[in-house]
Length: 147
Image (cartoon, rainbow, N blue to C red; front, side, top):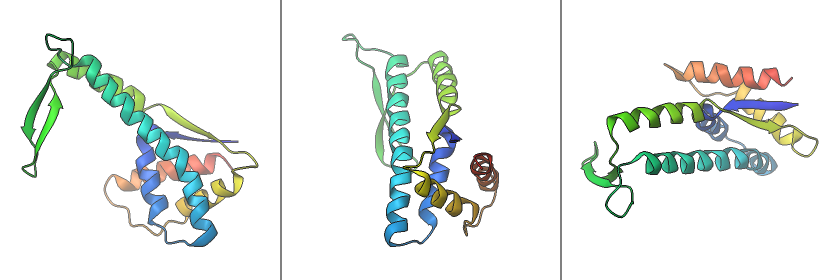
């Protein structure tokens, strides 16, 4: 049995999972279930950064160029300098990566964690509005498919 979730839905799943108030052993099971999800998010972020570095303009030493900018909160930040053509390439590559399935094999050793995660998602008390309700439906369907 496997659970398949698109990379783009992992953060939403973690939000739902962490919204539920649980204690003791159930909290530890949730943590064990979340661990590979968090690792995958970290891996995706690392790949996103690598894609940006690869596609960014380079300086005379071959390093990716960056520029300073002010974000919406007025804080100074740095970003990579990317041509519009390479930005389109990045967006295509990033979209492809986020559309990939993250597959969790459900085995005897993680079945209890999976069952609890499934229960937390299918019986969530969170309020969903806007696009969040579509995300919730996709996640519910992913857990229901594994039944």
